[in-house]
Image (cartoon, rainbow, N blue to C red; front, top):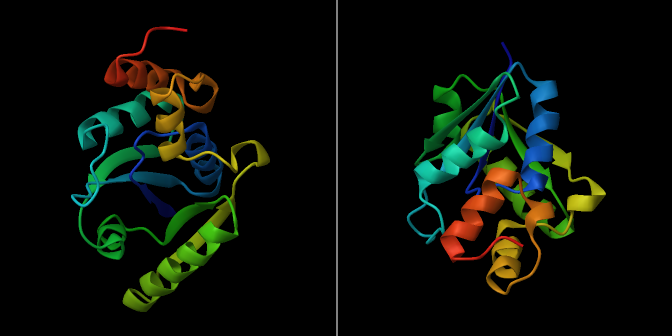
Length: 162
């Protein structure tokens, strides 16, 4: 069974993330979405809420699991029996950072590969941070996130239905 890990903070999961997940699920038998429990960031949603939102957004997709992790990604990936880490790339700036991370992960575990999936054109400008900012400022954000995430963002930010 070919297993891969798709790590991230997913605060919140966007349609860009969902697209990468759906495409990666076609490449691997088992895809583990690893929600980072990062104490250095102050997320809008708890780790548990982010896991639930991803599960609700991908309920129709077989072979995908959602869990949390702390510590080194390669240690988590090894414990999951993963052969690869999946990363989405939106722009050249993403590549520079992700390339460094891929090399470090491979240095820490010589058997761990990183698979880069280029973002679809319609998602290249999306990020969780930008979507939260648009939502906070009253802009339309529903088309950028799955329906469960739109509802959760509205509730978290005290926004009315549009």
